[in-house]
Image (cartoon, rainbow, N blue to C red; front, side, top):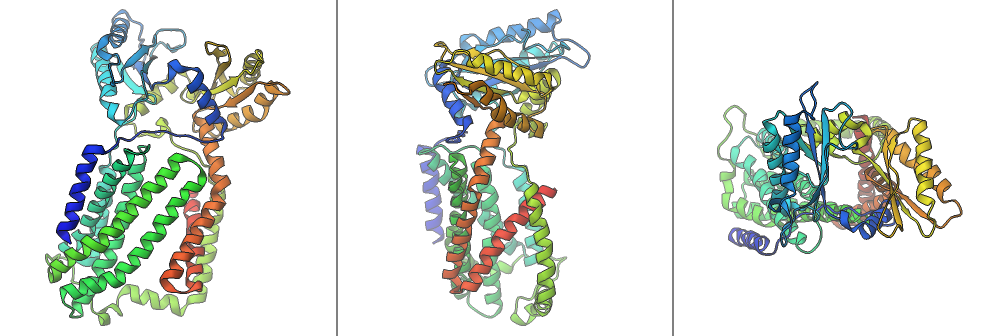
Amino acid sequence: MILSSLAVIALLFVLVVMVGGSLKDEFEIPGSDTQRATDLIESEFASEQGSVLNLVFAAPEGERLDTPERKAAIEGVIAKLKTSEFAPSGDTVGIDSVGDPFSDFTFSDSGRIAYAQAQFSDVIETKDRSRVVAVEGAVRDAVASSGVLAEFNGDAEFPPIEQGTQELLGFLAAFIVLLIVFRTLVATSIPIALALVAVGTAFMLLFLLAGLTTINTITPILVSMIGIGVGIDYSLFIVTRVRQLLAEGMSPCDAAAEAGASAGRAVIFAGLTVAISVTGLAFFGLDFVTKLGIGGALGVLTTVLIANSLLIAVLAKLGHKVDRLKVPFLKPIDDSEAARQHSLIARWGRFVTSHAKPVFWILLAFGLVLAASSALVRLGASDQGTQPTEQTARRAYDLLAEGFGPGFNGPIPIVVDVNGDEQAPQRVYEGVQALGEQGDVASVGEPQFNDSKSVAIVFVTPDSAPQDEATADLVDHLRADVVPAATDGRPAAVYVSGLNAAFIDIADRIMERLPLFLLYVVGVTFIVLAMAFRSIVVSLTAAITTILSAFIGFGVLTLV
């Protein structure tokens, strides 16, 4: 079994190398204003299909960028980016155009900060990351000697998935907890090793799936989080049961088999419940969220399969060696039935059962208070302004906000489908201008038309940062008041879009479909547990506590 499992994992690795795909961020919100606007832009503004990299330049505090030396360095590297060295070639993406950082719109009033947009020939994917890094390196090298700081953001600048520090800290915490539980290094290492194998296998399956469909860059992070958690959790069940059976005198093979039949069975039902439940994310009707659910289910099912095959085989081979390398500074735990009756957990269990009613009502009241606070949660999504300051995208974000105002990083494009109403874009423009007089809008650009003058875009810069609630209120105001006033009784169609609008559309979709998702989770939990325990009461109790725990989690998140 061990060799067979390793052979399957090796085969998966070979398949990933041969036919595995790459990750690509692709977010669609079917039926929303944001999606309609995006579709119009993609169809009518064909020259702007590639990813954009913002080249952000900054002089030292209190100094200016337009000194002869600094201006020459910046203009020199801009000219270099327009040469064949960075141009697209064959299937390799490259730069189609680069803007002027010293224009009236791209040079800050203070003279310290400026930016230029580099338009790539295509959407930047993970495999194209080296091209972006090459551009950033060339820019930094060219301007550093003149004392100019260069940072980068935009949709072309996404850092590679760095899953190291957080996972390492998680494994370290798990190692300490398991060491206290098992008191031996061998038993402690087994759950962590299984989690690593399970996550690695799930990653390989995920990249195979990426060869068939679009998988966004956040999915592997979710897979690792779930895989590490359930990998350690599920293997903990089985390892603990094997050690107990060995302590009771069973042979290693019999102990492993019995653990598989008892703890392994519980792992199967637990894993099925989680895996099927997360696929319910498909109810939200958002493809990228559905893929998150598929990735999460993949991680859980992989862990369940490995726990009930490779793990049991390893434990059968190890036998009593699982208790080797005892920790000298911790007293060994007696795993016999008699000793377990005197443990702290057993005493706590007896206390709870003997005081069931007061414990139930106290915890229920406390849980309901926390669950009620979930109503205060404000849904949204992170942008480059929430990234760590170690990343260039965050530093560029902060520089642009300093030089051009907090709303610069979250422009709101209003897309106008003229439909014969030629004055519609101008009416939208004038309506937004009126908001500027009230202080809600920092600036509004005149309508930009496509070649056939059938579609126009009016860019609105809010007076508030993208994450501020005031920006979300502005989007709602534009949709509820400005757009209807501009299109009342006329054929033009107007769509408010952009990142902030997309967040609102996603949040609205989630709240709209949340009851269906919760009903699905409750139903799955009830059915799977009814199959496992043959008890309606137990299954219904588990389903209700699942929903309650979800709302309590939202409540705690809101308070934090």
